[in-house]
Length: 180
Image (cartoon, rainbow, N blue to C red):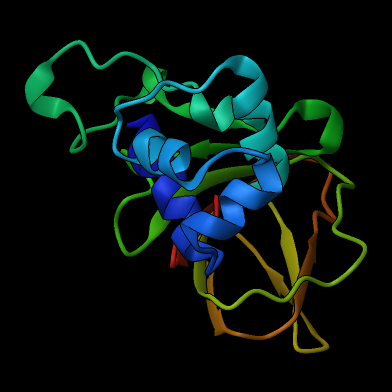
């Protein structure tokens, strides 16, 4: 699972093995072996990968899948990989079994008052469904207030968000290609 996630993150960012190796101070062969599951990176290496890809190191720590037939197919509620912390105002859980597919699905919980102050622009198509709470999203300079049951979609446009409510907002977010 770790090997596939590292490869998916590299590809999603349009980086070559040589570029990753140079940035990590490692050989191309070593990076290739990590991506194929032949070498296991140290904790320090995982921190370096996380910094390079701009993700939380917790992404690389998968939960055991007790039933082998479910590996890569099923994610049980209590076994999701958690990304982020409550201190940041945003906690996300990876709903997809891994990052190897053409999209990722994430459950995002936005704390009351949390906001993304600067707009982000990613080469992705994104969609979301508001499962509960109030959620504001600015897409290409236009703010939209969404509530439970509403949804959105955009592609390659700058966006930012905020939770204007007094309760957490829960959004199921789909991103293609995977960026986590």
